[in-house]
Length: 542
Image (cartoon, rainbow, N blue to C red; front, side):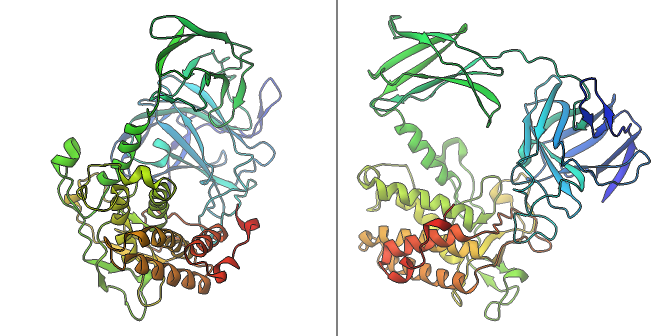
């Protein structure tokens, strides 16, 4: 419920000296302010003419605090910013928070697929966020179940704020001095050039392309540089080209091609009173690759992470997931609401203890594709897993941990696939062994079924060469893939949205043509069946 918490000054359609129109402004000067109740983990207050947001670290993902547009008399209003969709904010924050700002319209559609995010410093900075390209690629909200739905720039009602780019867990303090739309309330100070050297901090590889970037907060013509070897001998020097804006980071970049430096060793680049030391190695990414794959083990559900294999990341057993309930949204005649099923194993999601088919499916596929493309490398790669030493390549042992769980997420009665296994809400910051929420499988979806089908079809052809180690596994995977694909064909528009009472990660998708193509392609590769070949239409793959 939105509520008035104090008064602010409001000035509509005022003009700056440069002729820009301020469509809306909020000074947080203690005369009118409308925000929603602070979600868990945040406290909101007025502090010396600013809106202060204190985070204690306990906020969950997608915890937003909202600001409501209002007229001078305090009445709610709908704001039209279609002619000048730029938001300005003067803010600062401790611990470098990523402040995310989504605009919401009268139908509660939100620009959450392309949110405006800025990284705050400890000193006040004026930021500009241009929403002109963000409305058509809107998000899901309100009645939008088959989106993305365009956000109405002529009828905006709210700004939704969240720290840490909505990932939760922010500890620190944010102060917002003012916000405005159309033009800034103060002329931003000319930015000072802040140069940095961006380079591969692990290693460059011999025989590969190598680039170092000079980066600045402002445009620059050229930068002189020198590169020396470990003995201090200069081996390369020159000037960069003119910088170009990289819009993804709003920084200016000029690249330095160092591909010709191909002897293994340690080198130093010097430019603009900065230095950076880098390495050229034959196989410099091997340890990084192993560490990346080890992450999957650390994220395993339904198991303890042992001291021998986990070191400081050891933890007790959690989430057996052998008493999972069928949620009302997933109920069927064969499996009524409240039916108990078992669905252990799998990997936790990035920021919570829930398990999602569409998320973990692409991760599983990544492991499978790595093995399929480079089998000889992965056959001998040791990953220090509990299964190490068996006849199966370690990367496939890890993939099996999630494949086993995914198979349990398929309804054996009709082939449909539940979208996720989750509590009704996030658990907060607790260890797996201390989790005490009831777990559910929630609603089947076309996206889950197709992602499942693609992954299982891929896995079936890989494990066909391991029949002795996993008898019948390949056939089981392929049959599951076919059933899921058939269910999706019969249910092509079952788009997932969180049912009432479920607030964990949604991961919806209102256009599943790419998933249909992916699943059909993998099934055709694995079976050679022209039924799947006939479903392929490259023009439908975005």
